[in-house]
Length: 258
Ligand SMILES: [Fe+2]
Ligand SMILES: [Fe+2]
Image: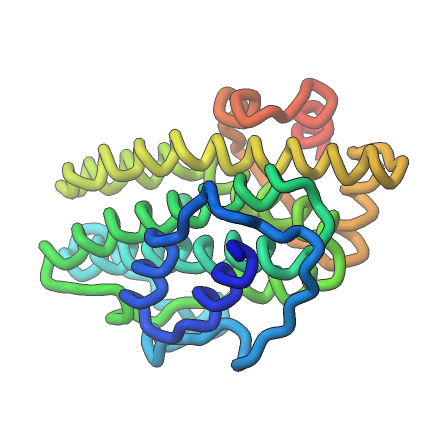
């Protein structure tokens, strides 16, 4: 059952094992939406490295040095690795959603594994690898905070954190390319293309759950952001990418008015 396999992959504690398990999932397999699953190991098997520290303690490095550029690529690899975990988590944790919900997030988990591999492979050509720098645990913290409610998860992870990735992608790509990391350009382009699809899935399922609960999406989102202490959404925004990901005019207006 795919949801069981997603949980098993989430509990794996080495990076290559997790990536391989996700790439081996057969997205056409049986989903079993009604299964109630219970983890049999500490959730989120964590590789011993990278060292996880509070966001403020992640060292910032200049892009004028090779180490600084590697550190930025490492931060991207870390986001992608966390994104694998987040996609697997939504699959096993929340029962009784339509089968397509689970297939969407399994496809996303797969794409996150591909993104991770692209960035990590490139990092290796520079003489580094995932785990070499300290990283923060902000993304997984939000997953833990929203573990009790799929609507909160959708509002605060794909519709907020992943959507933020759409906003910052171009700036990061340009900085890396200008600093001589030309190979990072096409990698960031693939990530942006796929992430539009991830945020689109977040929007689609967020609206689905809102409809089922009789909630107005914008009002519900403001309420969830306050209740779960979501960080304030700040611009500048990539409105074109957000539009392509299905944010409607009212949502974009709310964003710009914040
Ligand atoms: Fe990604
Ligand atoms: Fe994503």
